[in-house]
Amino acid sequence: MRSPFRPRLEGGLVTAAGLALLLYAVWPWLPVPGRPARPRTVVFYGFSILGEALNEDVLPEFARGWRQRTGERVEFITSFAGSGTVTNQLTLGVPAQVALLSLELDAERLAAAGVVAAGSWRHLPHGGVVNRTPFVLVVRRGNPKGIHDFSDLARPGVRVVHPDPMTSGGANWALLAEYGAAARRFPGREEEAGFEALRGVWRHVVAQAASARAARTQFENGFGDVLVTYEQDVLRDAARGTLPGEIVYPPSTVLSEHTLVVVDRNVAPADRPLIGALVQYLWSETAQRLFVRRGFRSVDEGLNAANPAFGRIQDPFRVADFGGWDRVKKEIVDGIWKDRVMKEIGK
Amino acid sequence: MIGRRNGAGIPVGLLVLVLLPLILMPIAAVFVFAFRGGPGEFLKALRTEDAQFALRFSLLIAFLTAAINAVLGTWAAYVLAKHRFRGERPLAIAINLPVAIPTVVVGTSLLLLWGPIGLFGKLLAPLGLQPMFTPAGVLLAHLFVTFPYMLGAVKPLLDELEVTYEEAAYTLGAGRWQTFRYVILPALKGGLFSGTLLTFAHSLGEFGATVMVSGNLRLRTQTAPLYIFAQFEAGKVAQANAVAAVLAALSFVIFFFLLRYSGTTGKERT
Image (cartoon, rainbow over all chains, first blue to last red; front, side, top):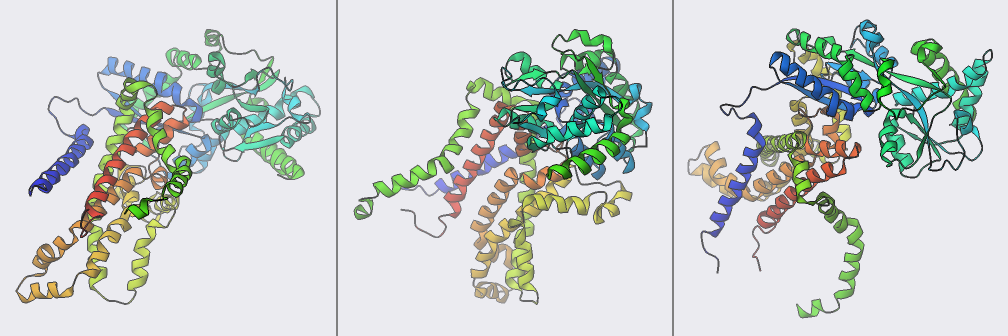
């Protein structure tokens, strides 16, 4: 037997449930008395491996300090993706005020697109470089293929997992590491040594992922014998024993340098002191120590002793040793890797 | 009835066996993984600021999308059903197209149109307006992607509606609005309800277009599906699954009401 008012009761319940859901959704935006004012917001974009260090340590610490000094709450709206992706998003107009990119080349692209003033980042401390991390090799446990250097990747039967230089900033650093390690060993015939080294490695690349993070996922899912990646991205898991492999430090490798840009056109005049303080804070000892704790190497070398997990590199080098990214992009990435190596091996 | 039940064991068993890994197990897995750390961990994962924002923001966008498209879709259905005009079929096809276009393509075209280098974007820029990478951009994408659902739910009912009722209303002296309000609208009730629910559900789960136009900003434009994706990418499976379980549960409830109210309209329940 159906009671005549049951449908009405049920309809009422459904409506009530719908209204409750609506109330839940709009709750934070309702003007409830006594609720603190909406905090000021800073939109911060970063390349992929920065997410945890910034969201969990570096930015909350700044917000705490700012609140102590000014009584104002600051909220960080963040977004992390491959450096190339972030650069494209900035070009398309995302409202970021600050962005930390994987390589200076992406900052140059932003300048070329008119998003930031040309060279503006070079006026920041350390030429805009916030922190560094060396490029390392990750091999399967026990190092069954006996890999100790980039030159070992050219040996027959070694399968390499590599991020894609077309989309990944990390991959460009990896190219420079592979080229530079060989070029520094054979002074006088740098270019040929570098070319042969790249050809040797790239013959054995079995998987190219869109980002360094994605390459690592492929390696963790069982692809390949060796992965070329940022030390920072694997340091924490290696220390915890959750990395399905072990880190090998090549005797000679590049230290990647991560460049900060301030997108002035997205900074309202009232926010300039806040953004200025944030930028200065990133190079403060507090922030640099937090980066070190998260596995990044500080631009202040003295602080790096605080992280015992950092491996020793006999001969670290920088992009400046090869004339900066403008030259490296033109002569090594495009001139040698793209035009000679990839053509020869037909990929 | 009895005859049909006989010998059903084997085909039904076979069907379940095939559907188990394809459909049934993935549905169960969402909940199994969400609760693997116990209900305490599940609630903790849900209570984070980011998760709360993502859920509320998704619901808000879904409510707005459903409300706007309920009106727009009904209006479009009415115009298309009542008027015969040249180009009617192409128009009908065009506005139904959003179901067929890959959502990522929708996202890119919206970006190209409304972004700073696009046609509308260039017009809006001097006014200081930039809808892309803001909640308004997300709403635009959802309105586009879910537009056909309301239309699809309402138009068949309008097509079936006898013109005589309307004519009778006019003869009795009813105005256009009165006729619509008291004659047409009641006949559309089932369609309006199911269309709105479908729109709501699709908006709640929209991913492809949203990921393009939102800029994936946490606490500003990150919807629940984007949150799930971002957490999963960062290796935080528990966080991702907690929100995924809530979304899945919501869609079950919506689906339940869809079946209960619209699936049975006009038919006797047994």
